[in-house]
Structure formats: structure tokens, C-alpha cells
Image 1 (tube, rainbow, N blue to C red):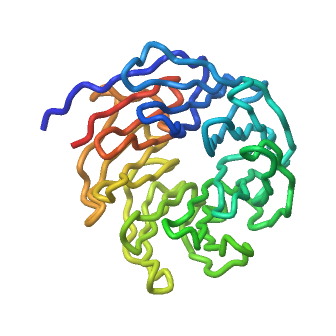
Image 2: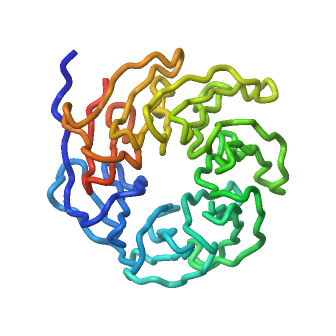
Length: 302
């Protein structure tokens, strides 16, 4: 099968570790080891706009609205950036090691995944959440906490832990409801199906694992999906496809109903020459990937 040639976005001077959507349709953000956050327009790939800079590699991004950006860096710094004034308004040392993911709970609090094996919970206050304050820190593992995902109902938080387990927490009190055995050598990422009772996880073992969320997280399926570490997994908004990104230099598409392989995206098809670190769906027909080769690639997806 022949696919349209992908579109490339270039400009970063370091590996790209994070992507996040913008409130404006057609725009998205990328964050890099060069310490910059860049806003891109899908229709104008040559004109990236630098929105923020920090003096550390950036591993995590979260944009809650039009005015703010939360940034997690390699040393555990949690930055609050005012995008209107284009200035950093707060910096907190959230974790001893890097920050790998940032999510917002339904009540407005932030949950941050740390390389020190804990998650931290932050209250937000002020106009649009300009001020943050540490509420509590919860140790989960002796290894890194790499991935977070909130389900569509907002009542379950999945946490991918470096000991291989997947922890399922109640977002209200952060009590642990389930511990899933997960992966042999570390879990990196988790994603909830948007319309079905299914959770998928990816790990350092290159495997995908599926769990039935309405049956006490019964294991459904496990299989080798990549030849190396899986860094990201994400369902399309309509729930028909699932994308994965791996250190094996490929991104792949899977049928979300059966997890049969649909498409492999690599250097030979216009993709990445090194590790693929980040994924972002832009609607159901566009997938963005980014990696160690400092490139962002936009794929047309049928």
C-alpha cells in the first residue's frame, strides 16, 4: 500500500522528547533537549515559533489552556510559563531526578511523574493556574515513574512504573486501587481506549499489554510489538487505531480492535533515523512523531 509522503518540521538543535496539543486547532508544541518549546502550525511547517526556553533538557509538557505552559525538565524542575507575557513565573524542584510526564486531574491539580520513583501532586491557583504549590509526594517504586494517563471518565489514573508494574490510582485521594504485574523490565507508557474498557501499556521489553478495565483489570493480551523499548502509546480520538513509538527507530499503527499491525513508519518511509520518543494525534487522520534525530514528522493516516 502506498501512503502520501510525510511532512517534516525541523529547527530543534537537540533530541525531541515531548509533544502536546495547542487549544487552537492545527497547532501543536514540541520540547527538546535543547531546552526550547516550539509552537508549530500544521499548514506551515517551516515557521516554528519559540515560546519558551529553559536551561535544561525538557522531558515533559502540559498546556492546560491559552495562557499557561507547564514544563518538566531533566533535573526535576517544574516550570510555569506565562505564554502571554512570555516569561517564567514559577520554578519548583519537584523531583530529585527528571520529570517524565505531567497530567491535570479533574479538580485542577497537577500530577507529575518523577525519575526518583514518586509522583507529586500540586494545587493550582491564581488566574488560569499561574501559581502551583506542592500538596503531597507519593513514593511508588525504586525506579523511574515514566508515564501517566487519566481515563475518559476522570476517575482512574494509570501510572507506568520502572519496576514493571502499572498502578491504578483514584485521582481524588490518590489511593491505589490495583497493581498490575506489567512488564518484565520496566513500564514506560499507558493509554486508555477512549470508548472501550481497555488499558494498554508499553515497556522496556518492547511488548504491549492489554487489560480489561471493567473486569478488575484482567490481562487480555501481551505480545512483542517492537524490537526495543516502547516510549509512547496513544489511541486515535475515534478509538479505531493505536500508535506506538519505540527506541527501535520506528513508529507503528495497530488496529485498536484486534491489535493487528496496520503500518510501520521508519526511515525508509520518510520517518526517523534514531529513537522515536513522542506521539501526538491531530484528529483521526494526522499523527505526529518526534525523536532523537531532532525531527518532527507528520503522517497522513487513513
